[in-house]
Amino acid sequence: MKRIICLFLIALIMLPAVTVYGEGGQSRLTVEEAMDIAVSNSKQAILDDFTIKLRESSLEKALYDAKYAGTYANIPEYILSYRIKTVITPLEAQYNLDIAKRTKEENLKSLRLSVYKAFMNVLLRKTELELEREKYEILKENTERKYTQYKDGKITGSDVVDAEYALETKALEVDAKEQAYL
Image (cartoon, rainbow, N blue to C red; front, side, top):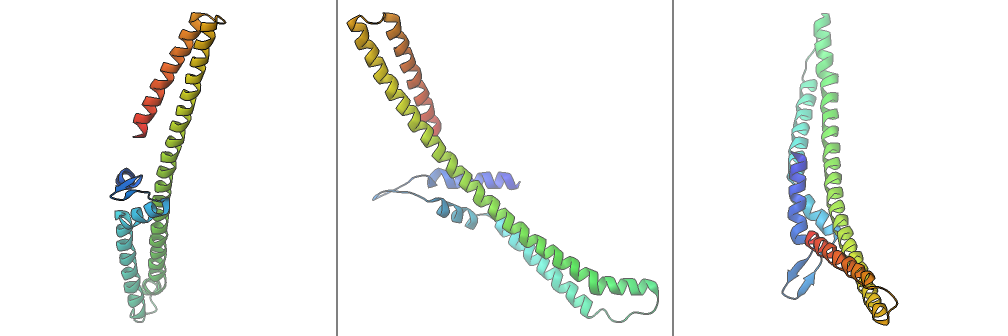
């Protein structure tokens, strides 16, 4: 469930956050801003806060019970019950509170990491698209050079056809990358 919520939040953040078009032109969202937005909109953080409050109240109750546990008789069952109420229950409540606080920190780190990874994936796709465009331009120049060589009679027509085929294939790859990027 956490992963579904996390992925949903990332999708909500990444779609409008990559580029925001305003009246005055473009304004870009930084990774830190996206992380802050994800943390502020995270439902898991709210659930973690409720868990921490619950653990704090159980600690307060355990400390109150330990303080007013009363005395014990010299019967072994009462001694054990008294020791559990005064020592073990408050320690267990404190331990559970510490775990809840650490869990919240880990969930926030995980969310921030997920947003960072999503941004890096967007940048990687953009870089790959630029590389494919550069490869296309190189193949275009190569095809023009081959066509010139064919006119001069230095190469055969099949070499020109092969170069044109490579150019058309690369154009299709660039179009596919552009569609995937959008």
